[in-house]
Image (tube, rainbow over all chains, first blue to last red; front, side, top):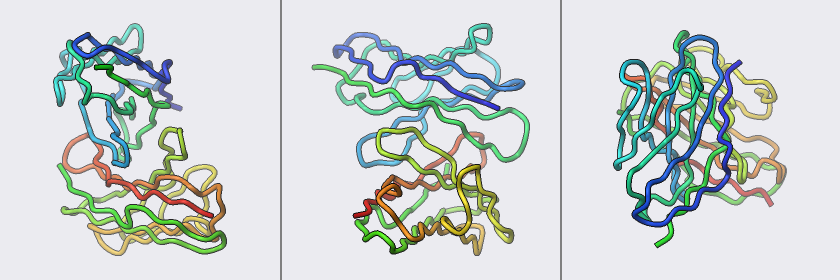
Length: 115
Length: 113
């Protein structure tokens, strides 16, 4: 069975500072890894994904994430946070094999960027 | 990418009644997924809906409580039956379109009173 852990329920960062939202995963074989963002009263929006290749992936709104196979981590990062980045962030995993592409989500991390 | 229109966006319902949520996709997709997001919680997969066959339900979810229709490759409905306050959640439909990432509707925020 696959699982995702987001160890921090809440992350606060000052505007302009770098931010990191942590994610670790467990899956049999190689994973697909994703980050999604949820703004209040909205559905989930796709930010970025790791499938294969370069461990550092870049996504929407200046976000990036680093895949670390030895640590089974996929932390989300941004060099300079904006107040508008404040939202709920979900890490998700699905197995590389299989056609269902069923996602398993982490518990979510509420990011608050302080002006 | 895929554009998903989900409605209603929100509703307040009396306990014991049922609500049907609609999900329309702008392209044909093989599978559609229904998720539940309880207050302050993550997303939990309810079922996978294939066109032309019965939906596949995850552990803890049953067809009598959450019947699903999938009449064609662009549309699906999820019904929340005999509702109780514990069913108050956000319900989201999702598809994979072309690539590996999932796309989500804007969600239906259900409050049962």
